[in-house]
Image (cartoon, rainbow, N blue to C red; front, top):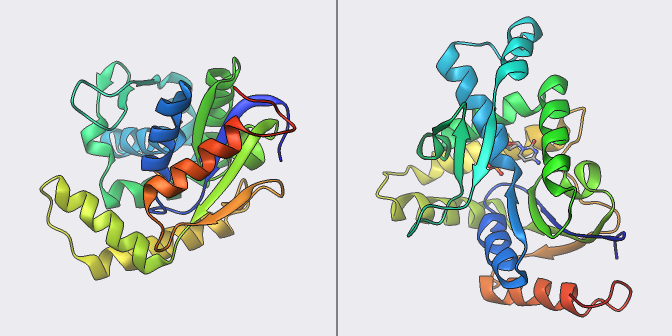
Length: 232
Ligand code: DC
């Protein structure tokens, strides 16, 4: 499967287990983990903070020209990457269901996609990354050697997301979360540019009822034993 560049892409809808799997796979391979969703959330956060209407290009353009987004490895004892917007660490404000919805709206804007796709390609230029998102195998890194598409039923995904949020001490309305997940995925799949979809050369994995370690092991074996690409 895939092209020639030592890049792993993991796309799929929200809550399919992408983040856990991508992080673990990157650590096992010694690759850098690239959380592209965090970048869309960072733009959404900046719009919210600065009172910018993401549907208005005249407001969005100056923001995109000036915004500086940086991703750094997690702080000691933490799981999530650190996200710096204009030099300030804002990661904890980004991982709410509401910011996910706003990120989805923001991500349908061509100006935003152009900016973030270029930034992601710059980060991945040297290879040896595991990129997770919606379009990393189709648009950002079509030349990636290993592509995966990770899916699960909406109920399982809502259930996992609630467990994650509860684990962080947050109160969760699981029915509301399920409705948000269904809407966000539909919007991400149906948008005009770079919609959520599996690359033709991606291996599709349904993680419903599958232990996360099994999914990571399956991907790791693919990457390290790929007969056409050679081992790492
Ligand atoms: O992966 P996530 O839940 O953090 O992503 C938040 C939103 O960002 C998602 O609903 C759609 C958008 N996104 C995107 O359009 N393309 C990506 N490569 C990653 C995320």
